[in-house]
Length: 522
Image (cartoon, rainbow, N blue to C red; front, side):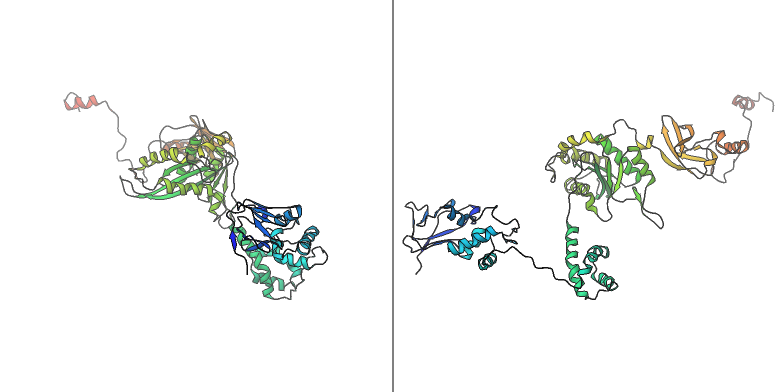
């Protein structure tokens, strides 16, 4: 009859022993043999008697092996190896993470045989001690001599000659086994469709896993900004509820964002928001990443690839940054600004009330300074304002630069009357440029007009609106200039409106007073 066992009062936490927090159980005094188990598995067996120290804190086997609550067995070198197993230098370099050995070295084979045939350890004890799979231990015990691992040759099938073709072609046909099978039949493939399906299945699975994997893209200080719009329906105390559009520009390195509220997403509002962000940060990054709105790029049509919005491209060239587009239907490409939009909607808008648009702008600016800039960012684990101190020296400075609407060249098309418009006034250019594209630029108090980077006209800026200025040397001749001058002076008239009164003589009003008094003869 088995002797009753007692549970050791504490746990062994030595991982190298192979029993992390192993619950050790030992027989009581007087047992005919020494057996110790951990997690229900026998880790030591000896035919000699065993006993306990008087204080009950250690278990001593008469073979010299000793267990204590906080460390593995202490014995001779051979016994220590029996408990701790071989060192990392003794193991095969091809051990798998699960402890199974794909190719066992000769030294490990010798150790297994020493423990089994000389030490009389069980296969399970050897498996636990050496960190090997039980089936591996069984195979090694059965081997009378050590043999290097010999991988079985891969079976040759009807699909083997087409392996390289299938691996390269499968992504191009979206891993369609049916299409691949049809193409293989044209290459004299004699196998079945099911064989092709089995070959393609792991390729498709690997592609799906790779597509779902997200790699965080970090940028250097001053390299990239991400820009996007967010929209929310807000109710104002003064006026009805309406949609408000929030412009968000996020610096890629520091994650500091600029927020601005508008009632639309027009090109003028879009460019104005950029310049306000540049002023807020004191500069801008070298690259700007956008989605694909029409204010940035025009969609491709028949015979024309996707192209930049002309005004936006001129804006980017004026401020010296490179616009980039994210991949279609891949909003995660600009995930930093997407997170900024979500943070705005989740932290700023809930629970707030706004009197009007001005109150909204004031609350947004206060929240941006007191909350958004000083929070600890979930990704960087730093405050955006702190990281911005390291990024600011790398920004392209914009201090002192006049706005795009004031100084930048803007494209214009010359009308049939060889005039171009600028701020509701019209200015002449040489008539030979009719129908061609030119660029106008404000410079001081002058308006400069360029064609192919060459200056073709220069006018003094007109102070009012709806005025026209024509230089005589721009027209085709004196008659045309005179005719044009009649039509281009004075206030604009509506079509079909005639002068209601003929020209009359201008007289001194005192004359009419004298007539009324009878002092002047009729």
